[in-house]
Length: 104
Image (cartoon, rainbow, N blue to C red):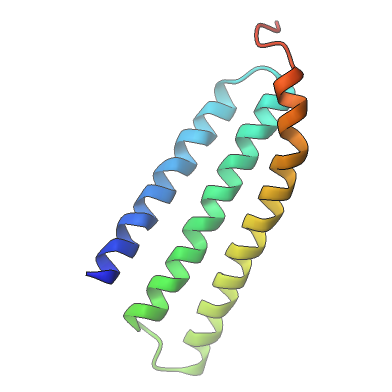
C-alpha cells in the first residue's frame, strides 16, 4: 500500500510539472514566466526525490552498492533542487504579483 501511494505521488508530481511548464510557455510576462518555470522546477525535483524514495522502498535494483549510491544521489539532487526552487520562488513572487497581467 505504501509503494502504491508513492507511485501516485510520483505521477501527481510529473503531472504538476507538465501543467506549470505549459503555463510558463503560454505566459507572456517575464516575471510570471519565471515564476511558473520555478514551480515546474520544484515539481520536477519532487518527482526525482520521490522516484529515488520509491527505488529505496521497493528495493528494485538495489542489490548492489552502485544502486544505493545512485538512489542517494537522486534523492539529494531532488531535495536540493526543491530547496533552490523554494528560495527562488520566494524572491520572484513579489515581483510577479506587482507585474501587470495584460502586458503586450
